[in-house]
Amino acid sequence: MIYVLITVAVLVMILIITNIRIVPQSNAFVIERLGAYQGTWNVGLHVKVPFIDRIAKKVSLKEKVFDFPPQPVITRDNVTMMIDTVVYFQITDPKLYTYGVEQPINALENLSATTLRNIIGELELDESLTSRDVINTKMRSILDEATDPWGIKVNRVEVKNIEPPQAIRDAMEKQMKAERERREQILIAEGHKQSAILEAEGQKQALILQAEAQKESAIQKAKGEAEAIREVQQAKAEGLKMLKEAGMDASVLKLRSLEAFEKAADGQATKIIGPSDLQSLAGLVTSVAEIAKK
Image 1 (spheres, rainbow, N blue to C red):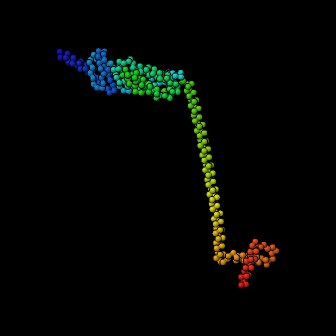
Image 2 (image 1 turned 45 degrees about the vertical axis):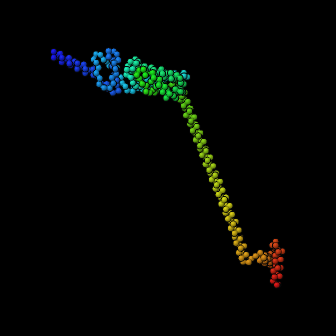
Image 3 (image 1 turned 30 degrees about the horizontal axis):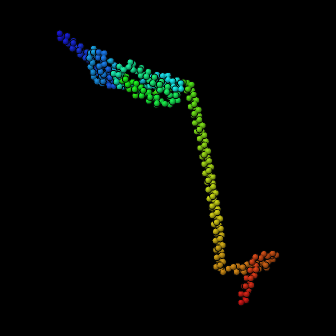
């Protein structure tokens, strides 16, 4: 009897130990009891009832990243492209994730592909190539709302790669090459223009400096001539002043001129040029003679 009790106790202990579960961080266990949802175990130590409870699903609550394969999509102007997307999502409700939809990852992939086709179908080729942010925002909003019943929250959606047809890529490369050449020509022309402007500015400044130099030279020359004239006039004025101080008035000067004329007449010159005021000089001599007689 004792052996039976010991055996039973050991079996009970083994059964209890084998039904102890520890839920790690960022995980959750969905528990079913007799085939029906019983509850969700979060982080910690839990014991399930043997033969009645079972762990239906172990769910990771970490953010997941799925890189879906490229999907063929058609733009509004009937251009077929291959686009692949990356979806960042997180499970927020383990119960809905377990019972909401069969194979939720496949469902999310199909939903992502159909949503991408609908969005790209409203855009033309140029818009789809330059509107990645718009595409990402629309897809995230639509997918997040559609996956709420599945217990999934879509955090981000990124368009990873857009591959137009080869003919379109060749045409785009030619267009980009032509645009680069056009910009190069513009830059070269702009450089020539700036060079011509700088050269013209240099010539202008040189002419201005030359004109300023000529102006300054003329001013200095005029000042020199004026100074020379002023010096000559000042010398004449000082000479006249000295003559007046020595008593050499106009009558004396005329008399001296007459004496010089007389000396010239005594010479052997055949021609004598008399002063224009000879008559006035004769009158002056007469006056002097009368004064001498008195």
